[in-house]
Every structure is written in C-alpha cells, then in structure tokens.
Image (cartoon, rainbow, N blue to C red):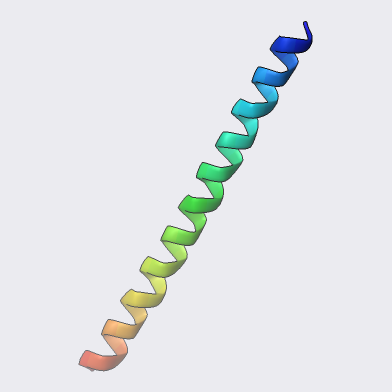
Length: 41
C-alpha cells in the first residue's frame, strides 16, 4: 500500500514537472513570437 502511494506521488510529481515545462515552453514561444513581430514590423 505504501509502495503504491509512493508510485502515485512520483507520477503526479512527474506530471506537474511536464505541466510546468509546457507552460515555460508556451511562454517562451509567445514571447519570441511577439519579439519577431515587433522586429519585422
């Protein structure tokens, strides 16, 4: 039971990490996109 608890905790942490990385990637993409638009216009 304890092992199962540890596994689910690790999986949720991994999902949180992926979610955080996705947010960072989207933010950078948006910022770079705006930067390119600002430079080209």
